Length: 107
Image (tube, rainbow, N blue to C red; front, side, top):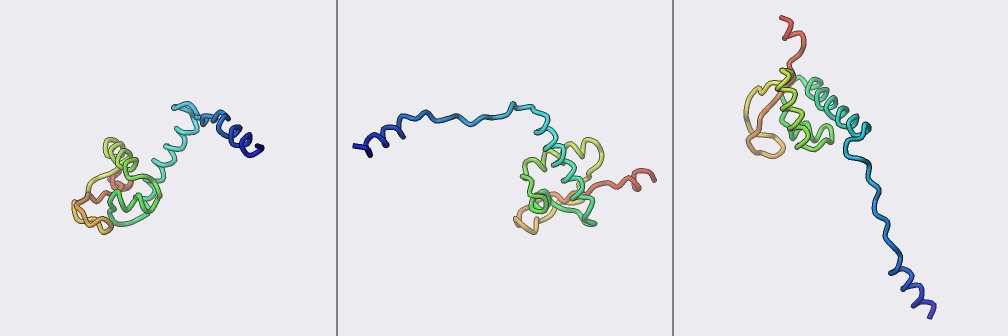
């Protein structure tokens, strides 16, 4: 009898919906800004061009986000496509990108 009551109690409990933060909250904006800076720093730390998948594995950021940050950096003139070749990770055709240093821009 007690077992039946316990089971009924478990089934009759209301499930709490997960509380979500508003879509455009400042801490999320800051998180993405940090990802953008991490991607930019990863490109500038390495002396040779890298693919988006290589940056993704280095930083732990999704490749789709890196794709968006690459487009934004190219639009601002901070990133260039050096060449297209075979990615060493996926073994598929990919673009190799590098950051344009400020020293090169000033010359």
